Image (tube, rainbow, N blue to C red; front, side, top):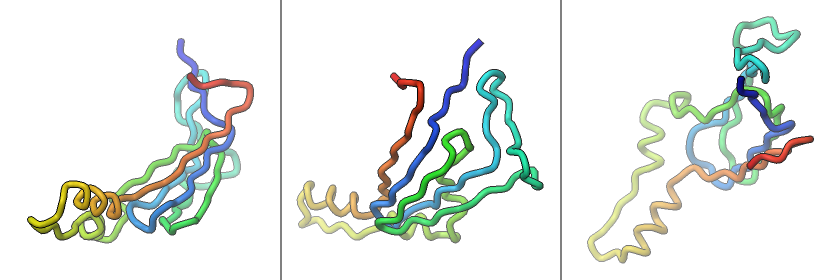
Length: 119
């Protein structure tokens, strides 16, 4: 069967204040079976934390834990509001692309692997 190999440490550095938060849950996947495993000492079926984007903010966590950036956690309409911007007919294609880039969630992700080289 397949093995599920995860980084020892995962990190997220926010380069913008926009977008969905990073959510990390107290569940992980067993490397041999692929089944969900509840972390020891965790009293809840699903426990975890949420980190909201802020430029320059850095977070790290156990790379085996399930994590995501669900836009469902944002206030109603906020995602659409952050992604919208005014484009005029006089704007060049380059100016439109620059404006579009200023309205996205940008992060720098680094994973630390021990005794494994991902390919």
